Length: 376
Image (cartoon, rainbow, N blue to C red; front, side):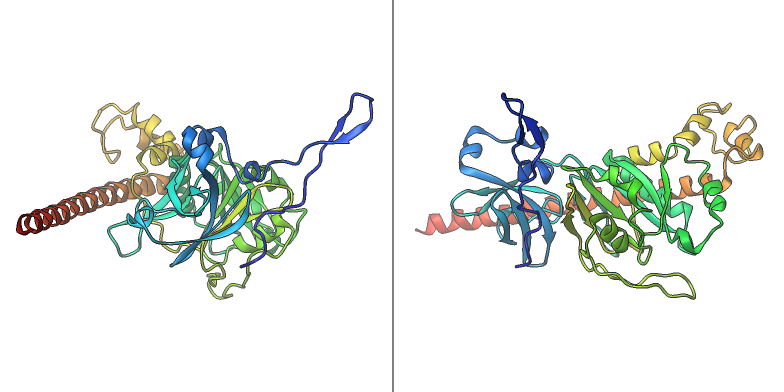
């Protein structure tokens, strides 16, 4: 087992005793450092408070998951009812309740946020992470920068209700920073930070997103510098790093699986493999929030069923003609809306098929038990 995922060294804060002398304050609870909040505490029954202990999922592997809590790091085997349903099984960032004596996982607590995507080439959702507070959408100042992809990530983040910041890495390799700021003029409410991920001073403005007790996720494609950025924020080599191909700026995979890392100043950082394909589903609210300006313009169109193409009195087309709305943004909104509708319908059909199959299995088992009982 690797070394502890959270520091066990007490953290002292200075206080003042009744005699006027400074005294060390009590160490911060390990659970609080891991993100334990009243939202999770309130989900526990009195019996669970006595008989169970909460642990946080730090990494997920094929046959086991790594968790940590007040007792330190543990390994939980992936078997039993908690892991039967792929769409409900624990993912990185989840809180589990373990039976105090046996260390058996009993249940997963309700999530405060959840990131998921359509699994590549499948009709099922793939879980990315749970209980994330803040997200750094990481791109880079080279061929990788793609505003339509940034909007795709934004829809996912806004659906989860997390605070987002766009980080453009490799800023030291491209001095034409104004071109990126101009491209982002349609996202004035999105904080943008340009950094050299190898420079700790350069990434300092990002530390406000990883305070003690909060979980920060880094999302982006391969080779944009997520692992390098994670290491700079943590002040230690937590994740492996690699280079990019010079001809097309495409990245090499360095992170093999999603994992949470604790940093010395508090907070947890999520590093995840680069996602070349991020298919969206069930993010209608997030999509609406990402393209709220288009929705506001559409409300001003002369016709309620305006398709925003060549209809008279179209406020959306008028904004494009006046250069206050980028036509690319309208095209991307339409594309993502079609994708979300299609994938959401596919997921609903898949869930219905799974439910029907489960009912059939239970019916067959019930008949088999009844027949066996009759024979006895």
